[in-house]
Length: 289
Image (cartoon, rainbow, N blue to C red; front, top):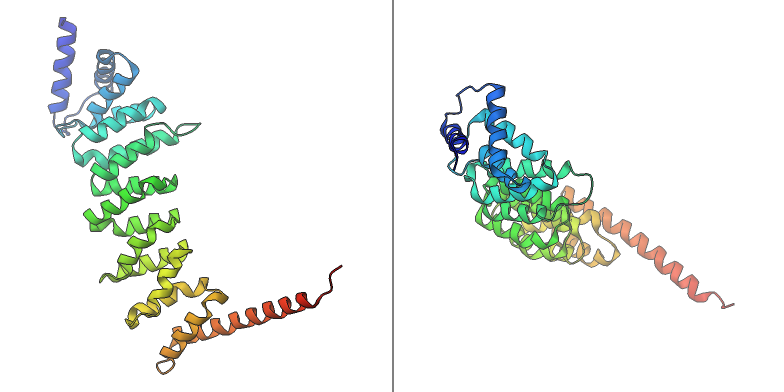
């Protein structure tokens, strides 16, 4: 190792150990980044060098250097994604949300396609990142309709209850019917916020997920009945008339605003069913030509 390389390594070590309040000139910051990239060699390794300056493994970042290194790595575009993924797994957890944010910005700077490491990196964040990092990653994975990561989100919500609502919102956006099993658990939980969010998601997803609400609307728990019915009511069809009528019978004595809405919905759907039956009957009577 020559003297120049030894000096460069010493300078980087001093920077990484320097307190965040230590002021450096723009020229000094630029020199530190230049020497870090020069020592690294290839573009991929330059990305790793910048990531180490931005989010050092020991958690001792120099604010000015870290900020500029982060911005420059984002501008690597597609070539910056793999170094960012590696940084996510090696850096102090307190940096993970910022790394995910940088990863998202990096991808959005690209004009074509999704980088190969992008979605796997977001999955890594859901597995290993801080709660804030996981929240960002789950939202972005849902935006990309990344259905294969759905169970990872749910596992993360089991581990961190603070993620339950973000996960439910992501499942609602994803509209994957397989989510109904987890949402059914939440619907029967003791947490009112979780129950409401789960009911909303089940109604939005529809299909077999809506069947979970139909069953809940006829359970013995009156609070659960009302919750399930209030969310399923806007998406009910003529096939739901039996459920609506049973709800009406159960709540006829108590009445109330929801009872009246259900009654009016049943009347509306009965009118639709009558018109359908009349139309079908008329069609059966038409002669064949």
